[in-house]
Image (tube, rainbow, N blue to C red; front, side, top):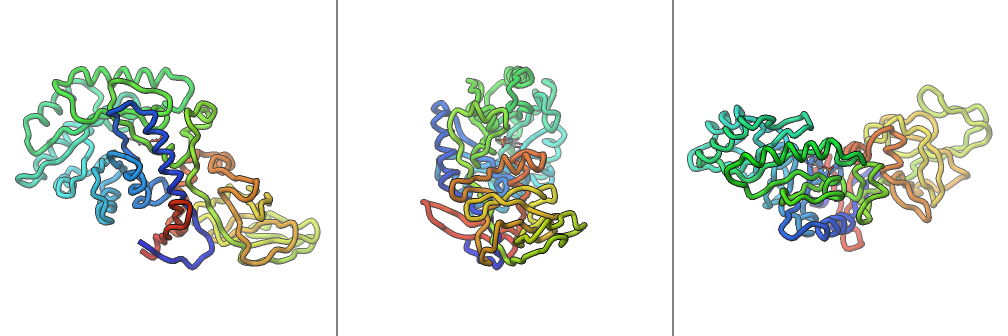
Length: 384
Ligand SMILES: Cc1ncc(COP(=O)(O)O)c(C=O)c1O
């Protein structure tokens, strides 16, 4: 998968860092605990195929995505590893998933009954039962329904009860009340099962980084795989250093000198106070570099300089200390010299979480992949 790109904006994804983050997590896990690598949403913006392969190389046992199409996309690219669709799929898709060896989530009895009639003779659908222990999203909430689901799964040879799981709402918060309550609810649900499926999983990154429980034998690693902390609260208590995998770079495509009173961009929200050098960058809100980032600093030759004026759909402007050559590299996220701009800094400026920042880096931004400390290949999603 090698594609070229023709605009000087790209996200650099360091696969060595992803490998290291998974290795560090694996060292923390007790023997026999499996690792599900969460590669939904194009691997949180990092690129599904590359992250999936890296995760598998680092010893991940399973991949997980949110939607069936994401799993099918991985299969299409030749990924043969087991994949779990964590979200709700249509029962009508049961045969398609079974045919591709993709595990689906059962989140109520009705879904299971509908999926049963969709399967073709001889097909076996791998399923993981989702328990809603307090997240309030999808999943079975009452024991009676869980009992019925289990007995249907046992009775029907077209299903294999491969796993049971839940999801925590507050594992990334220092306060553990709801986490403990959810864990107790999940354990209560497990206690009514007559048999145990192969995989019992509850922990996301936050819970995996903080807790271990003998009841679960698999974890689902998302944000920490990408080297990002599940929350700011957790930054000081991370059990091992996380290595941010993504950088966002661009180049100055134009430079001009403004004189006092000249303005920059839509709405003329920025006015030069004197002679000022302004550089134009080919990245804008359509790439996920949203208007809220007006005023955010970027790195030019290791120095922080501000974005001035409104961010346009495809371009934005920076104020430079002096003239620099067109083509000078600019770091929006990442390191340059002794300076660094983290995903967390951008999230704070946007008033959001680091997850949203990487997911928002659009398909129009090509990804370059670093493996074994050097450029391995390039992907340009819009030319694929
Ligand atoms: C069901 C489920 N499991 C696991 C994860 C991974 O969580 P994290 O990225 O916090 O590790 C997510 C992420 O949203 C999820 O929805």
